Length: 118
Image 1 (cartoon, rainbow, N blue to C red):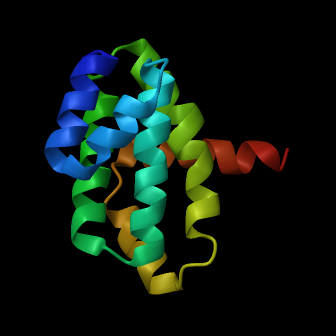
Image 2 (tube, rainbow, N blue to C red):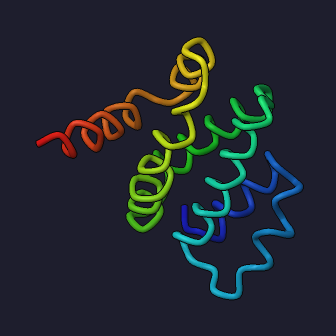
Image 3 (cartoon, rainbow, N blue to C red):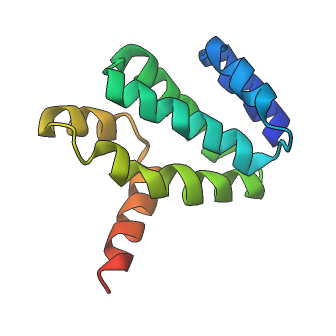
């Protein structure tokens, strides 16, 4: 999957994101994942669990099926931002979020978190 296919799949899950994706004059893997990450951040803040969990599943699919550029974008954009998004969530909500993230992405998240402590 390339970034154009990923953008289409994201739009299928979150139709409202179409305008945001089109605003980006430079579309590439990083801009698509950044836009989707910003959208997920807003879902977390608004406690929109149903759409959030579908979006997290879609992010997992993009990571699993994406080309190397998409995979790198997910790791460096979404995973890197995840801690900031969930810092102010209560423990139950944070656990719910992380249970909807694949084991692969959770491992990458853990590596990033523990890497900073070294």
